[in-house]
Image (cartoon, rainbow, N blue to C red):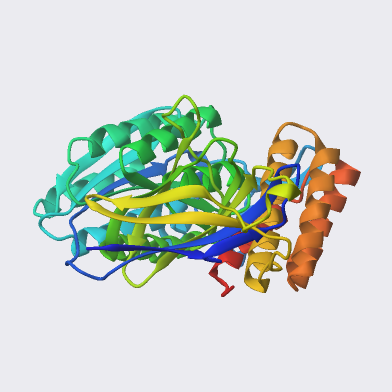
Length: 452
């Protein structure tokens, strides 16, 4: 397997100035298709709280529950909602699968597709976390029995996803061969979200990608998307529980298609150069974090997860280039803004990003301008979610309006309208619309799939 790393434009051009100025570079990382499928070591963390166990009834069953007194309308924060008032009748439960039923069905299907060298562990969590099974593909009966335990668990009412993630990572550390994936499935909120983020960073450092599946309209989308982005995993939004088997099967297919594992991009920066922002454009649009083991901050590392065969990862890097006085322009001075090193295992690819100071710099290419607008919209949305989580609804509203302006400039009118709707809701009521906000978050991430 070999890596390729390309830059666009191949050389930046900037006017000489006495102050620092912004430069952009598009980075494309790809791998050849050499080698066969690697073994997959899977850890599935399933939220087993009460909401995941509630049967999903159709309209006729719901009307029957209301007639029989099994459901009643109550006010929650001033909003009328329907709640179960007692145990669900067995006749209804037998024909109305819960989200956990759909999860178990998905995992049974996955067990049938495991190769002998693949490994699966299943962790259920609510207030407590419990390892249900951990076995390789040859021990199918053991795996099936472990999955069957999922439906009958009672692990408390609250949700502590961090406990489940920690237990799953401990199991993955026992087998570091092949592709390591952790899949987190939840439909609600968790205590200690910062611990979940710290565990996502730990997973990335151990070459484990964390994919998150958020179900329904009441989950922490900002937390789940950040966990996926920190570890190079995928963030998936499902409106309905019956979509779980398809989503889980797609994750297995993605793991089998990996050609470059635990891809990283390292940037070595000369003195005076600052990396302001790094944004992944594809496969999903998202702001990225970087780490630095060097106390001077001159060597930065982006963890990008696995790279699938036939696919590429595209990034937009935004730098602050150091000043060059106008009198220094004679001869057209050039300097290196960054040395880039992509690596996966023993494979590496290198390129230098060079800036040419000239009295007549070239205008930014349309593809770079488009990428910069997408990156800006993603950052505004991320900052708006953080402001809303901290209770600053007015700041969140302002940031969403800024995101709407960028989306409008890109011709993404429906998304711009949705962002303005969320901004108005935050400004007038102090809170977002819930499901509408999540639709906006995940739809914006899909802008990275568009051709630049």
